[in-house]
Image (cartoon, rainbow, N blue to C red; front, top):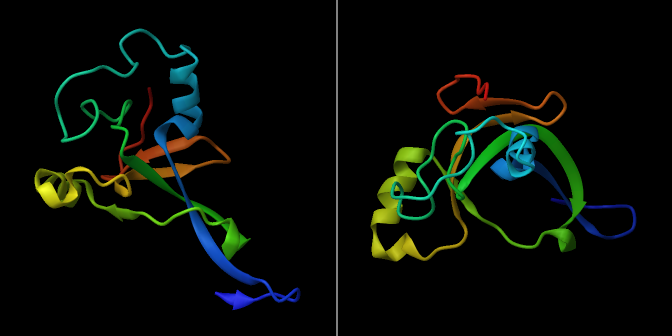
Length: 126
């Protein structure tokens, strides 16, 4: 964090994307992905539908190389992003079950190419 020329506090941030903000996620919400690839209800994690590479749960985030310098006043809130296994352990605990700021890292997203890669390094080709 530093002070800009205009005396505003500025911070450099790396972007994370929700699945529905990715090119593939937008196609799914538009109904343009072939049958069987949409979100489905059911069990799985403590919150949301079961996660698959094509349809991660609502608490998944994809990291990216997209960076910005923003005025600190534009930041709405902070969140905690952990690995999938750690997320599952945390959400089993009553302490974390109702947290709206807890996410797991589902993989990497390149916003310029639309390429998604799972946290295990496998490209997502849905």
